[in-house]
Length: 181
Image (tube, rainbow, N blue to C red):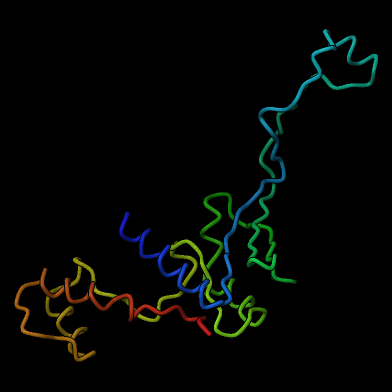
């Protein structure tokens, strides 16, 4: 993990030195019934009777349910947020909101960015759309050999683990996202 972080920081530093346009993209959500669990309180009011006589509340009220969920995506750079790039929509599922985001949601952002832009985002699977399936350990040895052969990458590797090591060497070059400029 430390090596990946080091490589990332090195790449970003080099891109900044080249004045490459770097954008940062992320998403979050908020429920309609969202409320804070802690707030500032006026300690001079000592009773609910005293609070009501001043038209004050006596604390937080818990929401009856979570309500609708808004999912929010935005992208920005050192120059600020990209104009008209916020993507805000009402979620349709009650579970993990990530199921409602996929690479296609991000395609509308691309025309708003400078040419040859770098987009920094986490490696969540819904951020990209794979062009093809990459072999895993659940694949049969013959299928891995076929995948490598189609790409003229098959060597003299004879056992499955060696074939998968070859796949790992090249997979980052093979899994370009669908929506790169």
